[in-house]
Length: 318
Image (cartoon, rainbow, N blue to C red; front, side, top):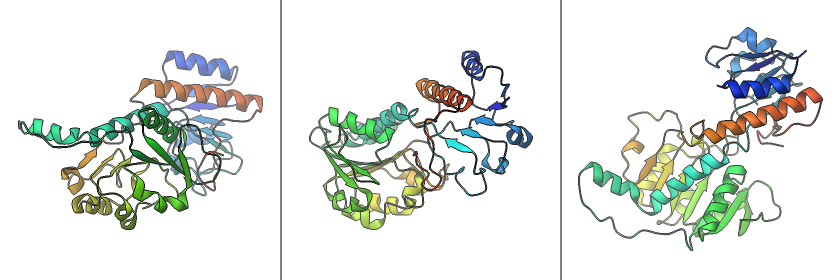
């Protein structure tokens, strides 16, 4: 028998689905905020993002199925035992985050953030020319599920899309041009829109340097829905205040929550949303997470290959 611990906020229909897959194996439901170290360390399968510090490289844990796409807290040495398989929720968030990114993109290029400010001040003001996705060059940095969905949306609107990914390969459908990450400096000067959906890895911390912002057009906009530490807040603020780029939007910051005293809050050409692109804000996302959890639980019990297995060296899906 396998002990299955579920900490995601499932309803009765979700429970029925999980229990149908689990068969005679006991399923325990505990909200993540109430889960104990003993419950975590006695489980053979965990579905949910339990506190990493409580796992303690448990030898009982065979499968940890995360509710998130990000895995950085769980690939730290000493968190998981070597026998534990780590799977993430890649594929669950592509609709929600790509649509949020699209909304931020349109908000920036149509200057809607300025009109919102004018509305709040009861001022009838014309903020001048705007731009369009038609004919724009869009740089998508990170071509996972979210990046690819956003790229296809921008392509459908008439943009020329350049994708940036770690490894070379054939240019995917929906991408006009593909470059490796180490060649990003060659394409940054061409971009009208830069969308970053980078995960948190050793190679992505402060990826967007002062030099890289200087390579961008002064009319370019920058959107970050990946990880906040891909860009230092002071560097981004400087790029906005100096006019190196026209505007920016971020659903992620470093640190989070962004302190109230941060000048980014008050920067006129900056739009901030508090890490709400993903999560469970779109109900479709949670349904996808339950689908993945049921699928991998079934694979585990049958000894089959898993979906979304994580490489501990890179933090990416294998």
